[in-house]
Amino acid sequence: MKKHMIALDLDGTLLTDDKKISEHTKQVLFRAKEEGHLLVISTGRPHRASINYYNELELDTPMVNFNGALIHHPQDSKWDALHSPMPIRTAHKIIDACYDLGVNNILAEVMDDVYLDSYDSKLLSFFDELENEPAYVIGNLKQKLEVDPTSVLVYPEENQVDKLRNHLDEYHAEVIEHRKWGAPWNVIEIIKKGMNKAVGLQKIAHYFDIPQDRIIAFGDEDNDLEMIEYAGVGVAMGNAIEELKSVAKHVTKTNEQDGIGVFLEEYLKIKTNTPS
Image (cartoon, rainbow, N blue to C red; front, side, top):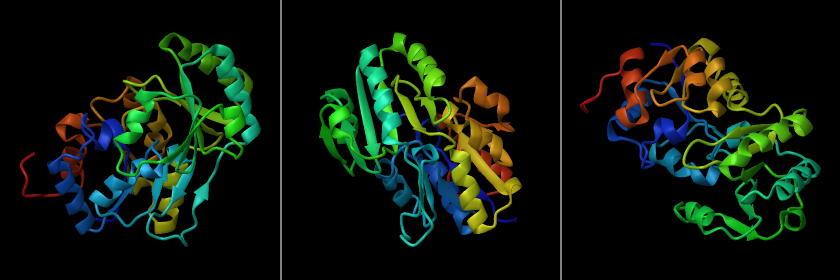
């Protein structure tokens, strides 16, 4: 079997609903590594919220964070990392629009530092669940945020989502990308134009000399669309949105049914000792 690169989205894909990697899927992935395949995490999460899974899988490969706005190697500081933040002027204009709309909250991330516009116990509880709790600053983002952010996360009311996304399309489409998180969050994530997971996979595949037709990618949400279309073997989870299923070459079982493990066992002829 020729070497493949296996790209793994985290939430709703590799992770079960309780944010775990199932034992069966983990054993399939370990076996895939033993057989010479490359495993790469490709996620909208920041480094701090994905490094634990990277370590759990005992990876030694680059990682795609912030939907492609950060492509780096956690174990090799000399690797040619790519950090592509959005201009601070653009971020401030978006923040102004969010103030005018009266959204619940706004959060900006600069690598692993977090800036939160107003105190929000629900959002902070999400960070408190992480082993690598970030350094965060709370206060008016127009005053506190002084450098180009890696991403801006807007937390609107559900009935504000369409209006906000229409505004972003009308006024900022040339400079930013925006995606909506899946349930239970109505969060709109905004990053620099041209950044997506496919950009990260292309850079990593080129580095390891893996052809496009030997890239296997798994995803479930709209931030996986470019990655699933780019990969020679794009796989949508059974729980994926219909738009992603329509562009994927394959659909596997859900994240609760070992979808990744089941697909790889069949596609790469991987055998493990764990029951499926």
